[in-house]
Image 1 (cartoon, rainbow, N blue to C red):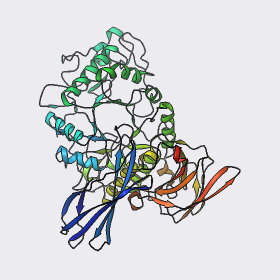
Image 2: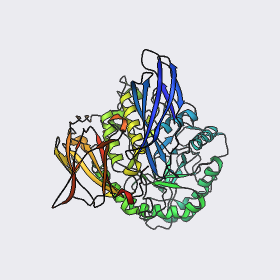
Image 3: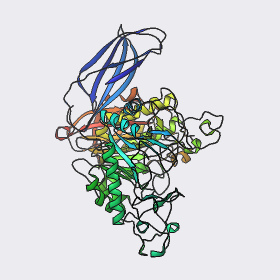
Image 4: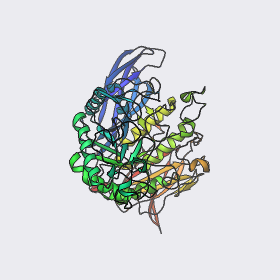
Amino acid sequence: MTITLYNKTRVPFSGSITATVSGRGRRVGDPVSVSVLSLAPGSTTTTELSFRFSTANWQGYFINLIAADKNGHQIDQEAGAFDISSDWWTYPRQCWVVGTYMNWGAWKPRFFGTPKQDLHSLNAYKCNNLQFYNMLYRWHQPWIDKTSWVNGDGENISTDLIKRHVAAAKSLRMGTLIYIPLYAANVGIAPNFTQDESGVQLNWAMFTSACGTKCTISNIWKFNKNIGYMNPNNHNWQIYWRHQAALMRSHFGFDGIFVDTYGTISTPLWDWSGNRIIMDTAYSSFLKTVQGYVNGPMVLNPAGSYNEQDLVQSGREAYHFTERWNNSSDIGNFGAFLSKAYQVWGWANRTPNNIGLDWDMGMNKTLAASSSCSINGGSTACTFNTPGVLYQEAADLATGAHHAWIVDGQQNAGDGARFISNDDFPIGNMLSPKADMVQGEYDYQNFGVAYEKLLRLNVRASSSAAPSITSGATGSTTAQAGSVWMFQNYRSGFDILHLLNYQQMSASSFNDVNDNAANAEAPTTTGALGIKMYVGGGTLGDLYTASPDVNHGAPVKLTYATGSDSSGRYITFTLPSLKFWDMVWLEDGVASSDYGVP
């Protein structure tokens, strides 16, 4: 583990950095320390900590980091985490690469470093696979034999920068996926696809009327003035598309393909023969045709719930990525995150590891679009609203998903990455994060890795009776404004309880999971909470709690009492406090679990 030290005190620092490793609350091995001889005020240095311990596959480890002076007094505390996995799709944590653009057209983002610098920044936020966004010559013709090209959005792309980013990603063991739309073709930039000798044919398109062989390019259904839709059910288009995707892989060394869609198709469309196009199985049949030829992992973004079940049940995705949309058709409030996770896991039903989840959602989008913000030419230095960000991070992680919204580059010096504050795509001028958000986002991403096996792998709704808060707060097993949402999961060997604090949340904020206007209020940290938690039928062991809001996620062992009533066996215990989110886990038949003692 590489650690950067920045001395923000007024005196030279001499002392040590000590790391203690734990897995599911239990310490692993002996603490590891490194000495720091003298670090001047305002100076930085890097150091490395080396660990050696027996690990299990698909398991996360928490690293507690303590900086102490030469007398052994604690000066600071931070945290790290290890994801010990043989792949990057069991626990997908996708982030974006856009730093291969030499000129951005209408957009003016700033502060990109070298590929190595920017990908180390993403690595610090625990990104493990990268979407290389819109580095295509044209949507239907991604590859052209040049050292650079201007894409369909007017951005200049460097092939050298693409290759350097891919190399940097591979050195960090990150997966690399090249963005290619499912059905997009150039219609509005001369020459259009019928005149550029790419081989794409007009009769492969989707048309707005049953004009048949009399259709022209003007009859094609369009996403915007430059992008027209090809028919994803058309076999010739599928064959053409897979060849183009393979070209991009072979020239740049991408691991696989990120297939994008533009979401729900609600208007009637027709093919060249005048037949209505049926999209019910379009995504799964498309992947079935192209996947063997492309010969690499593929992810397809359905952009919401449209055709989501068929896509998941096809078994063709490396993991399940989608733009989750903040409306009643998809994610209408914070409780919908859990419903959606259970639904997707039920559809996939994969063994031995169920499907990984990654949700793309921008934050504070109404604020980011304001003309008063300096990023849009105004006079106000607008920033993300940290409480809104952490409410969503807590809901995403607690319900088993990763929040995909981090992009390479620096917003301000030292921020470490850019965060999406628009409609869920990683270009444009983004809001700037404040220091508390940077720390909070890091703690939440780190927590998601350290406890990944309790959060994301083969968990399901508990069959035990519902938990309750007996003192200190108002609890509810239904997510709602004005109370603490409690839900309980089970995985082999563990009862897992999540508590999310919505006591100070307004009804409007509860339905605005993106915190679009950036006005969500932070919760008030509670005092001690009395908890009653019904448990399974195994041998009970140790009880732990951890929160990314407390000591950067360090685990705490709790005491408990047991009892039983007409609803079953239960334990009672005291939870020290609750701010945004606490997780509690009880060993319950752990001896027969796949999550053994670390």
